[in-house]
Length: 175
Image 1: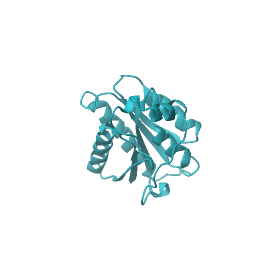
Image 2 (image 1 turned 135 degrees about the vertical axis):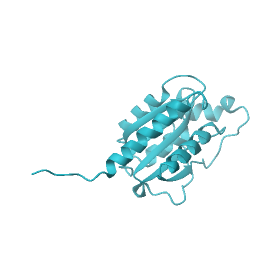
Image 3 (image 1 turned 90 degrees about the vertical axis):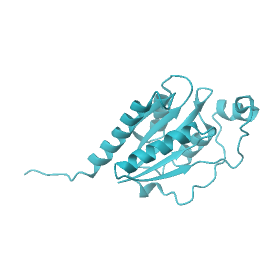
Image 4 (image 1 turned 120 degrees about the vertical axis):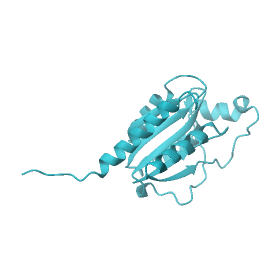
């Protein structure tokens, strides 16, 4: 069983969740690779939400240029897990650009998570966006506080693992 976790993280909150998911899946004997999306022209961390380019790129749904992910081949994995912070109520431009770039190349099941300070179900919006592009989403979760949401994150990981395990079961035919 092989999983890829692809995420964008500007402040480190989304990366914290991605690394936790990787650790928990590894404990369940899932081979997991992580890929952090980087932009060709990165935003400054200082005053991030006052940055006119961040605001424009986020609100306009504009696709931006992202760097290649060395060694990433979606066909190598049994499942892909996508993680993104939420900016101004939307998926980050980097993740949006990634999912558009790979929309016709990813045929495997996908799970997704969002991080935000607000307790809103942004992952449901992310799921809908992914499904509109042809992704098959099998699990999703919105995370607003890593420590408080730990049980929900563990449940999300269990959903991903159960799906992986079920997809590995041999099919028995009866005559």
